[in-house]
Picture (cartoon, rainbow over the protein chains, first blue to last red):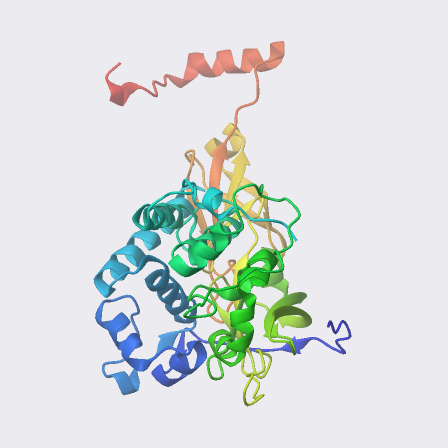
Length: 100
Length: 314
């Protein structure tokens, strides 16, 4: 089943840096709010805003949250282990980028 | 359909204990998990390892698999024996791993349970209204000029018999000028339709860049190494530098050193707040391969009084 016929190109909305509410993030990833709260508590996600109702996440946090879900599932991590893994992965990515 | 040697996939013997199997899986997962691995075939290998583990970690599935016997070779043409599955009961259908990725071989052996639990499998792929997330790879030039890209999306879905099938969808998407890596474009209603309610979800496209032969990109800033002659660096002057949207004239200050970084404000990616373009000077020397050039070097040597190793104390 393919539909090659696309009449014209679609224009999406370019998302601003901190644009997603907790509700939108959860809806988009099917994550429980409690799970996101934990990720924030352990600094895996760092939204802007003081209280959960005002939090604004980056669009990139969608990818980050999914990565966290996969790592927890596939390596049986707890949250502090996850936070460490994510931090080390960020550092490795940065080092690889510098190496290039 | 090809036979799969799950023991071989995990690198364990057929009589390996459950704890050896778990250990082997953990080791391979650390090596090939697409989120942590730098191997080029990581995704492929991890799927293979995940499928093998889904079978071998479960004593019931493992016993059923073992019953096929050990005369099979990996990749050999395979059809399940007619009495396959007799006397085995599974507690669950698909494992908690992403079942959509599993092979036909797995499907034919353990797919029957999945059919019975199609409803379950469906919700696993698309929990309520889950938005779709995809990466789109563009050129740096696209970010400077804007572009249209065709994107192919593969969606797992369940066919009428409850098996997992994929369908491909092509989308033409406008890439607005000024995007940079890590930004997202939201296409409303272009995600997978939700299986139960049929309500369309959104599609999020994450921008990433193809690696470029001349430029390196950091956020909105762009870096380029520009070779200059010794006299351009020493005397200063105007040189022409390529930028992703064309070329630009740049003034090199006199007495520039190798590696000097020059910032061209606002010439990076033309976002709302544009990035900068950084030009790094690379001094290259003409070879002393004619009498004239040799003489010029000799003259310089005589008049310059220059010891680059002074600070090394020699």
